[in-house]
Image (cartoon, rainbow, N blue to C red; front, side):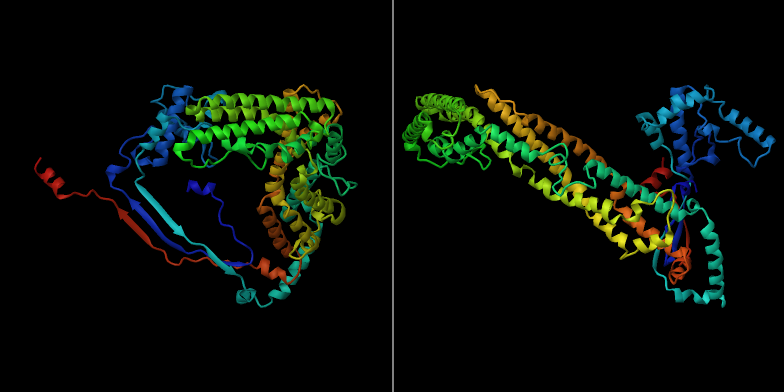
Length: 583
């Protein structure tokens, strides 16, 4: 059938007995009113088929759009290029083609129209009109189908000795010796097995070279090498230390927020029903149920307590040399931070005063005051964000996984050097290949270790690169936001440009890693393909394995062969019969 041209056939595994029983064949004949009832395009009743009808529907639409008859149209199906037909037959076919186009007002498409119009239409899904016409095509009159089940078990060489001549062993050795003489002189590029191994080797080599380039791995890299963090162009830990040495403000403000600020605002947080999370962001807190009778009195008391605590904060920052965190700031830094805190206190006092005189609308003022507090607090939190994100722990997760990958890649490239990463131009010794890559082989162990890193490449490294890049970007954004919200001016010390360079490096690394993880070498079937070639390689040299691999005995039989004909007939119930009899 036509469909067999698109199948892949049956894949037989060496060393197994294969049984293919054909269970049954079914043939369906439909009643005449359901098939071939119309002459469809260039098909007459006797030539009708469901596929042919759909073919005609598709190309009828193309004729209307391109205004020509394509060479692939069913009108042109009677080809004149058959090798087994004489000139007279070809002329007769040409005449039939002209007759089949008699109902078409369009000429045949030329080469330009085939490429510019017909091909463009075929490349797109069918439009609504064509799809509808194809769906309306009647079913075929006859349909044949069959089912098969393929199963097998391991081949026992002893089972097939009865099928071999008595002098088989001597004959086998003689043929193998003759084969080896010819095989040794055969160009390796003409041996299918060698070509397959070379393809695997090329895929492995491409992966390794791309991985070495992506992660900057050379023979002389240090143990601390970490792409974009610690390499020839970047040293992120040193850059972070230089930044904090030049800008002490971040750690000092972080200390003030963590050890002083939040503990003086408990009453304010209870009143506004907010809280500080583990990352020092503001979040909504659960409120306690209160007696409705005393709600106003309780609310007034909460407001007064919160105002009192805000006044205490204002008094403490006016004596900054006794406040932990603030006392270590430079004079201009301390002035800017104190100004920011005092502005927040005044804004909050004003908002709470409005709430005090509008108790009936306390919910609105809670939200308003919480928003006011957050606007002032975010500037201080930005300073803490810089201190937290720009630390040595920022790349801990990235460091842990990628170093394992780098060590494995470096060892494979410069120390163990498996042969599959060196074979080029089909210069492959099959005996050496089979010995190195069979189960337990030296190079096979190295390949397995490298493929264990597949999860790191495909699942772990990319999110960690994204996370590290995001943290560094967030730290730079927080630093800029803090300076924008104060009167302070950043001092240029070169650290920012080096961190930005690190971020650009990480973005390039992310793109390269995304490409690397699509390598053929990392696909699950690569190792299976390698093991398959090892199995086949056993058949290319005299050994006990020869019989197991080459003497594959395939037994094909039909368990049973049954043909069944099903004829569809019109069925009538009593009411339809009465209708026929008494119209």
